Image 1 (cartoon, one colour):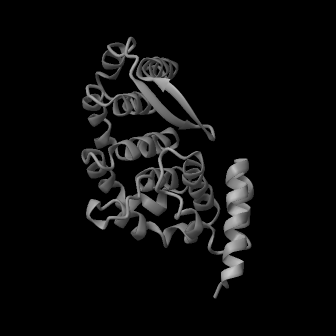
Image 2 (cartoon, rainbow, N blue to C red; image 1 turned 180 degrees about the vertical axis):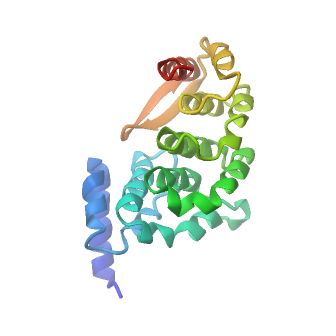
Length: 219
């Protein structure tokens, strides 16, 4: 059993790696410590904090190297996505998508639940980001969710519109190009965690980037 001092030392080591954005080192740490994924899961509660987003990405890296560590956490992440849990695991849905990006078999059985998370206000934004990450590597996963993105392009929340557009650059259901073109002048603000950093952008540029990706893939 891990002592309090050892647990504190591990947490400090993980935080230092997250601050440095050193995800390969974080995955390698899992070779020596079996509690890395569990420690990372305690940083899923503040979507405005860069450290918490890096913890989401870190969970994906650990899943890729040590799926058994992350598999134990799936039930906890699902519980956090229950609005009645009171746990406010705002980034749990994003974490599930990121885990699937790196180790699809870990979440394959629960993929149908992702569709439900998209339909809930409480989990929609986090799940959109998670699906965007998942679809970037596994574009054929959960195809029934892709048409929902077209509906989200008309959502009153620019964060939802922007992330839906971002996702459409990875999967392109029928009608995606026309719908994205209608958003090119949309200057609604969007915050996006991407390539290890938080960046501020807008719906229009995300729609433009999605159209360029679709064109490159012959869409």
